[in-house]
Length: 182
Image (tube, rainbow, N blue to C red; front, side):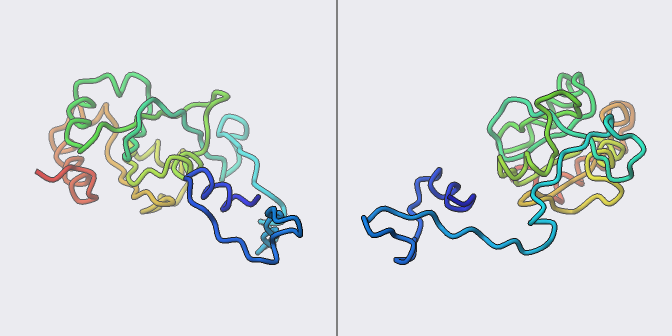
């Protein structure tokens, strides 16, 4: 079963199967394999490389450890202590629903941010810190990553000290649609 059929089946949505894909005994035959559209697809998925595994490689990107929660907005912080700060609590309250927190990590459960977004279908990602954003995305920080809009704001250390940074953070989150409508 292809990924697309497995995804639809997991959602409980019956998938259209052409008649020629049904075997003679009435059972569904396996759907035809999707032909590789490029040499990259034919080679299979690229192995994950963390910045720690290969510090000299330009495209080595950091992995992320996902915290608990079910919201549609992902907050990516640099340190574990960031999400416990009063400022983090204030920022989380301006959303329609609590965010899911994540942090940079090199442990076994860590994944690339793109994989986490694709798996959980986040619609917004707020990255706290330009350095963290570069570690996760590389040199070019995208406006979107899969279905998620990416917003990069200052890190918590700067936000805690600088009122102008807090105002810029608020305006960036408001402009990106992260902040709930009042």
